[in-house]
Image (cartoon, rainbow, N blue to C red):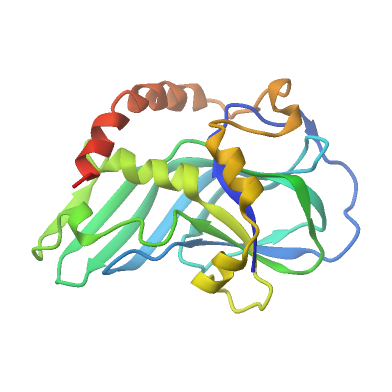
Length: 247
């Protein structure tokens, strides 16, 4: 599998819409969640206000609006044929995870996620192949993080100290892979062999990297400004939340 994107939280997006019929064979796009240490995910899903692809001239094509998707590789969307440079996701509500700990604990996790984008300035071509969106990064979560290592049952909501740490991982460390062997899985060897230099460099720059990003305003649905206000308030607490996770 070839690593195509690393997630970037962004405040800008394309202005134009893709018109006409794409040439080539459509692929598939399947959200999945990275494995967690000593945790098994059960029922997990989220609702998205909008998911769209953006070509390398900043023209957008909406893949879905107001849709609920499973987050464990159990749902897929059609990926239109063409060459693309970005994938924009605008969650509507929370990402929900049911998590069973190895020691018998259980957690219900409700993550309020800000809109985020995955970008690849060089572009990638869809022509019939499958893709996997890996949310977070392997071993992003442990029983100790959730407080279930003693066998307790808990709920993680926005007021929990660990909430913003986990939300930030989803928003900034998710990746999109081409599933070259079609098995629906991303293993460690695939990740080590992937060419990630450009993607990690964009991430470390601390912002969206597409050339049109400085001039193209993000089109947002009604009500999203309230989410942005919440996001700005939440950022003020992230340093304290991150400190909670450090040993």
